[in-house]
Length: 221
Length: 402
Image (cartoon, rainbow over all chains, first blue to last red; front, side, top):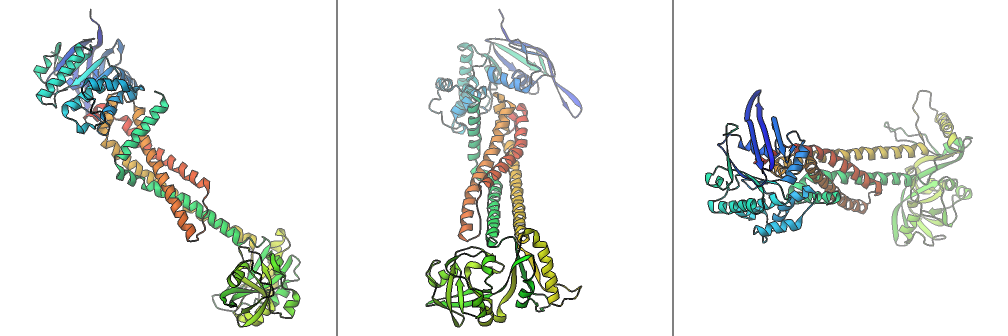
């Protein structure tokens, strides 16, 4: 029985640049169920970043419906969208996107700060699990790439989100470290039953997902 | 987590980013430091000047009228003279009219010698200047008529010659110029002046004695009078002018060769001009603060641009516009507040130096609140726009920013 976490219905997005409309997404229909692990592939300019931004509630579609947990969020205010990002979504970026002047622990605690529940024991637990318990007070620039990405994973998990959005999570890492990070992501899906949407270029990495979605010229092929 | 602890956390966050860049933060605060310092010091100086003026004129009541002869450009000698005292005495609206012949002369008692002021006047001066005797008596009309070489000492004179403001001086003899004088009285310490004369630094002798033996034509002559009451001052001034013009044979159209001033007007105009000065300087302080605020705004804009990426990250993980707004507003406010505190610390130093160099300054509590209020107002006003800009950033663009 399917259990949709999110549904996209005829999502379109176009940008207007000096009077001309450039369509980026041309009618996306997509359903992601709870527990899914989906890889999103496509060449540059195919619209995968835009799609990820819309699913990640960082952007709103020009038209179409986006149901997140049965709620239409496509017309939500920026404040409401921030709440969804905070409570229901976890981001993992290619370049880690940690805040340089905060310690590892403070970075991980940040989503809790904006939630209004600073769950310190949860942060410790996550950092322990990811093998970073010795690095709590380090700054991100004192860590290796793999360690930084693990900090970012811990941060994405702090508020116990429904959906993890990973944008090229291994893109800035060597292949061995990339493999370690992918193992963690696979574990998140298998053991913790997290729903995962991952953008990648790498076919070998995409194969670890349950399902691969190819995007080309703003359409799912 | 309560909202107070969110505010505390945000405060800590803002603080951290300021400490991360101490030199820049300090330079940014400089305008605020100087501005808040200026306001406090200017108010203290204004209060000091006001107090000094009040003290200076405290020995005279507002009904006192000063008549002097300004030195004219042409160098023409004024005809104001001792004769005018008797001309003015009959005026109904005046209670007392006394001559005042003043100058400086060398005085000596045993080993102590000093150049001090001498004032030759009539016994009525004691009432007019409201002088209280600590010892002995003031001179009398007989002393004047008989040209008795008697003097009454001001408190500072006693200190200079006898080593104490309360020394036992009555009956002692001092040298004034080349002659010996007998001390008949000692005045209480007063603080303040009568016209050109500082009471405490002067000795007082009968007019005839000062004129004949001590000062003569080297003395500065003027006349002091006291009106019956405040209401009769204008009439008194008119009458004095009429009498003096007649006595000096001034024809209609000729300028007065004397000047008549009443104390009430003099004091209030002095107080008024010192207040104008204080307001002017306080305005300068506020302008400095405004410029400081613009400095904060500039740096906050730079900071927001530099930290665009951080803002994007914070937004991606759920920061709302108001979270970002408050964070940056707090940074501006902390800088203002810190600038204020440093400014106030420096103001204590400046205040100490002013007092040390005997510049009259009186610190007043409300100047600190005024300075604080202006500082915080400026911090909020100029911090708001950059903070607003940060809050409104589009998270996607901000995340992409390198």
